[in-house]
Image (cartoon, rainbow, N blue to C red; front, side, top):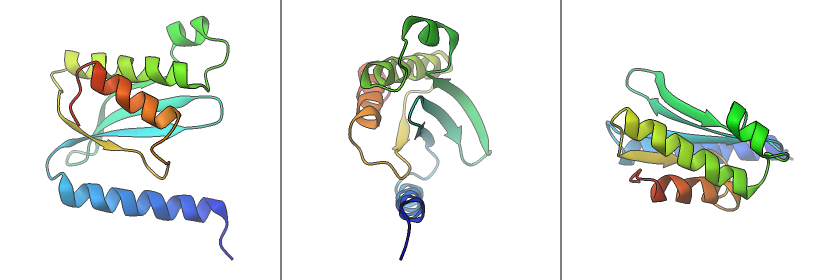
Amino acid sequence: MTNSMSLHEKRKKRNRASLRKKSIGKLRLSVYKSSKHIYGQIIDDNEGITLTSASSLEGEIKKQYKNCGNKEVAGVVGKLIAEKAIKKGITNVVFDRGGYVYHGRVKTLAEAARDSGLKF
């Protein structure tokens, strides 16, 4: 019998393999979420570096919202990551949801990033 963590890892591995085939040479917007926070980072897989990142732990977000584990904060983080990316000249990325279902906070972050100018 497999536990839920190993199923999550299988979904993450399958999703990343699919992204590698479809997006040769593109940057990746990766999402990680915990029960209390959400994180996004734009990664260059060819160089193995993170170009920019945003999370609900940043000072202005953490001061403004008491609960950082909701969809409203995910939208703010999505908007923030898009603004930082556009300042660095990044407009086209591939969305990596990891092992998470495209629903709730992950979907809200993605839609906010799209609305703020990122294309994926």
